Each structure stands twice: as C-alpha cells, then as structure tokens.
Length: 208
Image 1 (cartoon, rainbow, N blue to C red):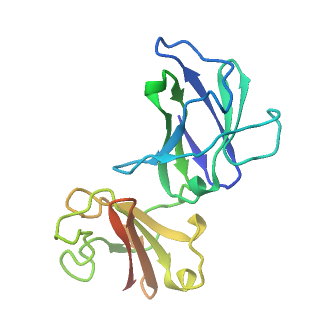
Image 2: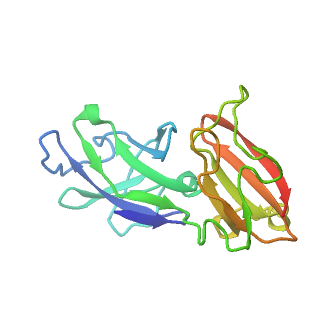
C-alpha cells in the first residue's frame, strides 16, 4: 500500500517479523535493527540514525522516535530530511539481523498534475534535438533522473516546495524524458534536474 507523506514531524507504522515469518514484539530502540530509507531507483540507502524510545504511543513527535503500539506494530517518527524529498521511498531494516521490517511504500510530497496543465508540450527535444536530454560527463544517458519544473518567478523567490512544482517527470536509460511536461506559453520556467548520489544537480531555464 502506498501512503502520501507531505509533512515534516510525521510518523508511520511498520511491523517486524523474524526469519520464520513470526511477528516480533517487545523491541525497543536498543534492540531494533538499524532502519534505512531509500528513494526509488538506483539510490543509496540512508540510515535513520540513532533511534530514540518514546514514552508513550501518544507522545509528541521526536526525530527517530520509536515505540511498539500493539502486536509487533511499531510507530516510527521519521526524520524531517525524509519529507524534504520527492518520489517513492522504501523503509527497510538490516535483514542479517533476523528482523524484517514491513512498511508501506511512501509517496513523498505527491505532486498534483505532475505532467502540468498547459497546452505546450515540452520534452528532452525542446529547443533542439536532445537539448534537454540528461547526460553524464561522458555523454551517456542518466537513468532515473528527476526533472522538476517551477515558474521562474517562484523559483527565484525560493518557492521550491512541492506545492510550487508545475511539472514533474523522470528519465529513461538514454536520459530521455519518460513523459513530456505540458507547460504554458509566455512564461519562463526553471528545470531542476537531479539524480541522488549519481548525478550533480543541474538548473536550466527555458522560455516556453
């Protein structure tokens, strides 16, 4: 099940099972397997860091706070840095520990109308053949890069939260956009192109 996650200081529930598939109860911060999160695609695992025991299931948010709610179901207060991302995030543990975490796939900061709502089609060939194709320094395509489009007026004022994204797409193995954005003529847009851990973020301006 996917759940939307678009706020800081939030929490999620997950379950823990052993190698035989039996639920594992009674875990606390010191005995729970290390927890990691990773964006979908070829991105590195990011540790949650040191877990902290919460005093009760209704306690206020504490970064990396943990507590069992009932029957091997645990509350985890995720770190703010996770909510600053965009895309699908997987939560997992260290399987070698014998503890297997089952958590929902998170849709972080889902964007309304991700392809845009304007009448003008913009893709990797906008402005010329392969003009906006995402390539590495050797000229090869970058797969899984994320392309976020903002109105230049918003971007230049620092309005880069999910609510100000006017188009969102990704790239295939050739660095081509998997879907075009539909933008409005007469406006300048900023494209933020990123691929965590594998590609240096680029910022491009286009006029539609």
